[in-house]
Image (cartoon, rainbow, N blue to C red; front, side):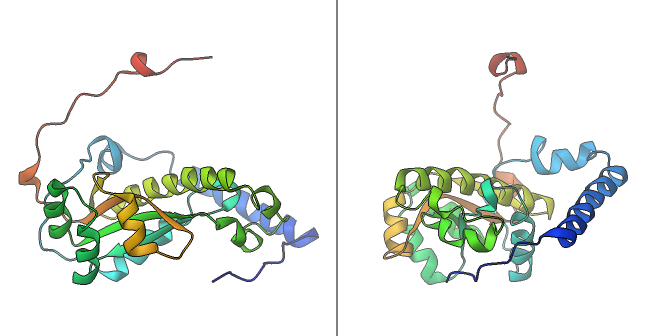
Length: 226
């Protein structure tokens, strides 16, 4: 359902909002110079992709808290094209299992929640609400390839935000790409403009299934200056 267009602030109201936003950023930077080593390890450098799960549930309240963090992450023109389906019912799991490679069925079945990270190909219809400063719909209307590229790129970012947000709240994650996008789209998004990107299991991991961390490239292997 399309959100009603928002009226962009102007004049003194706009200046007050800008000043307030700048003040919030300055205050935050003063209060928190950087994350500590333990926090960085929790969300990225020490985190792992998990394949086995305990039976500890993930509440709807926690899922809503994750989304409230994710929605604040940056996207092009605030386009926010990602759409998230939290699969946790037996019926939802049965539909999702049809799309999975055999090795991934048990991973999904044992996870409290599996998220379908999808994107809306017609995200641009919501831009009057999300980006009220000017009408950016003509950038995408009648340009399906440009719209699809923008939706995929920014929704992928939002999927990464979701993984980091979940870890920040103490959950574990296990992203999966061993599935058929065509089947997911048929089972969950038939007759819509939504398309699946990747899947991510959420929950509290059973660490006994982990193995050693695999090698990573060094800076000099993949980075350069220009």
